[in-house]
Image 1 (spheres, rainbow over the protein chains, first blue to last red):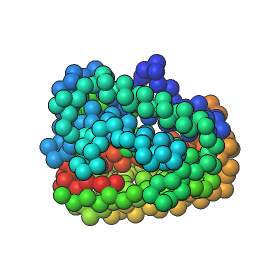
Image 2 (image 1 turned 180 degrees about the horizontal axis):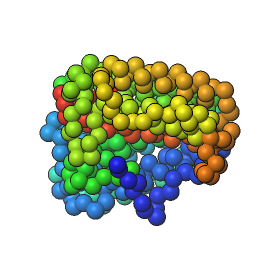
Image 3 (image 1 turned 90 degrees about the horizontal axis):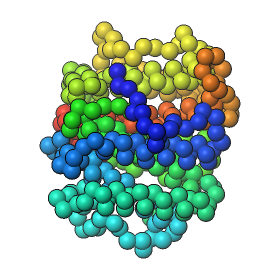
Image 4 (image 1 turned 120 degrees about the vertical axis):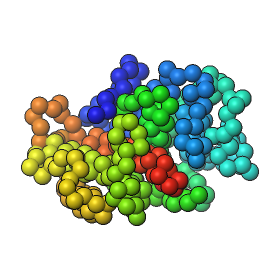
Length: 172
Length: 159
């Protein structure tokens, strides 16, 4: 049996909310979950890739999610496809994940948190039915919120097992 | 390295269709992670917490049934345990998971997302919207576990 992570910075969404408040609360829950999954480790452990065939590390997941935030809330929702990438080199696959040898945790976490704040600002200027464009397809802010919840949740599932393989710590 | 990645459906539609489409995508993705494996391989313990691919299927059937049939609708007798069963195979677990989706989706389709659960008087009020979003994120999180377990088994990648 795996127990819940308990931390004052994270609260489970209230049981009775309207659509928008519920979407925002679940997204914030998963943003904070990823942060908690990375805490209590040193730099080497956060950069460790415990599955030999995989490029995934906790530090890499934080960079990846910062890029995902920017992709959906800036490039797509704000219709600003020219927004630059933070770490990604379009010519190199998974370039936000590896290499991390010179990556600075404090700076990267700050960049991620700043990107989340930019996302909140962008979303705050739109209704759920407003749309953005990604590669010719229209998606609503409602879809972006819902997708971000499942995207974070899926990567937090990765973070769960990476963390367990790194130091044995578990908790949802 | 085999990569089976499929992008989630991209939509501009109402709340219910958006939630159900992305949840279905995650459910199908869990099935893709287990499909085609031998039962013995899918039962392998690869992490100390004893999460296995086969158990994940059973656990998700229980989670969906507990929340929707039990706590929301009060049909507690229809909620199964999530323990492995004698004679369990990958195919029987996938079949049970898919059959579960039909039961669960039929109940959800009959209710407004603002409706409150009536199945558990000991719980504070919870609306169907919370339950569906929780099941979406729980399925996605377990799909993430399945990604790692599958990669450990044969290196397969993708959602």
